Image (cartoon, rainbow, N blue to C red; front, side):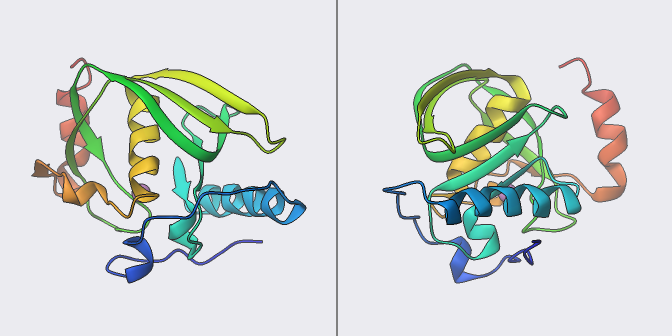
Length: 163
Ligand code: CO
């Protein structure tokens, strides 16, 4: 089932989310529904508050087939800094640069309730940080350095492809 996306500004996007205490069938279904909703909107990440759920759950898929389903994710370690462009399903047509760590180690629980640890680099590391921010009620625009007009996005990407 696809959920409607909550669009900024909305109080639902601004509340710190509650941790999950037990992985239920309902939660597993929610992970499937969040993925379906994300793909339907051409997204690469989605956090539970974006579908109106105040829980620490997010889904990321940067590379097709490489899906991360994050329950109670925590950044254990962050290294380096990189500036790149972000967007958000909850803030349509807004893009801008944000400084993020370019390497993060994240601990989370998967849909089996197993504790996982992953080390991510580059844009995947960025996606982890963006989604974990959502779970704390933060949006990328809170940290945006420079807004990139939508019609200049392609040019910006080409110019900074090798950064
Ligand atoms: Co977002």
